[in-house]
Structures are given as C-alpha cells and as structure tokens.
Length: 163
Ligand code: PNS
Image (spheres, rainbow, N blue to C red):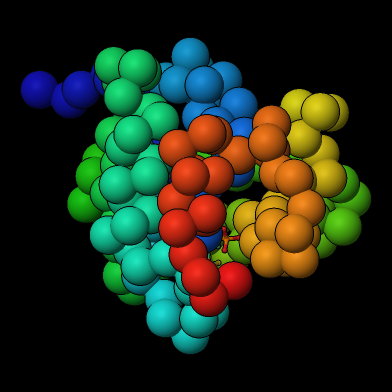
C-alpha cells in the first residue's frame, strides 16, 4: 500500500549547525511527517568537524523534535532521497546570492529525479547573514558568536584549538 506520509530531506554540510539551520529545521519539521537532516560525506571541502561530530552536534539540538532524525550520505542526493522514500528536498535561502546556486541544484535534481520537489524556505531575517563559514572565521579571530549557534556547538568550538 502506498504511503501518504511526506518524508523530506534537509541536506547540507552543517559544519557546524547554526541557529539559521535550526530555525529552518523547526519550520521544516512542521511541514512534513518526517524530516531527515542529511550530512554530505565530502572531505574535499576540508570540514572542521568530522561527519560523526556533526551528527552528534545535530542530534543534541534536534532531540526535541520527534519527527526529525539525523543521517549522512554519499553520492547523489536524489539517490539518497529515493532510498529514504522522500519526495521533498528542503533548502534555505538567505539572500539573492544563494538563489543562483540553489536554482541550479534544484533544476539539476529535478532533471535527475522529477518526482522529488525542492522546497525553499526563506531564512529568518535574524539569521539571514549567518553561515557556518563566517561563524568559524569570526570565532577563530576571537569574536563572540553567542546567539548565532546553539550553546552546545559554541562549547565544542571552544574546545578546538585549531580554528
Ligand atoms: O550545505 P551545503 O554545502 O550548501 O550543501 C550542499 C549539498 C550537500 C546540498 C550538495 O552539495 C549536494 O546535494 N551534494 C550531493 C551530491 C549531489 O547530489 N550533487 C548534485 C546536486 S545538483
């Protein structure tokens, strides 16, 4: 029997998760029955945190959402989505500068898997300038990042001597 449950994937690097991501997770989780946050295993981006560390950090902060789970994947996102029987990909858009790349990915993914729809959520204005990359950069240079990432993530960043 076909399931009418809506499963969505929220893919990304999450190196590390920011409050902007968290806001999107909270809003995305209200739209679907099951939301899977999927971390891409891609060492070519030279991540600060290992996939396992990022999964731990995500799991710590999404535990309060009963329909959200954390996973990782290799290869094509649409193949992973199909394995999970997901019909929706959720992505966030902060500014026009995000739009071009996101449009390319959404159109490519649609070509590869026409049955999977990409849904864009606008980032909350409070976090519209926040990115994992900038958080790491300013933190490494001594700035205060409280309010930009969950406290547990800030604590992990503090433990790192190599930023
Ligand atoms: O957080 P990011 O780094 O912007 O996320 C990018 C991500 C993981 C969504 C994208 O790189 C991706 O989906 N990679 C998986 C490989 C793939 O399917 N590539 C084709 C995308 S059109």
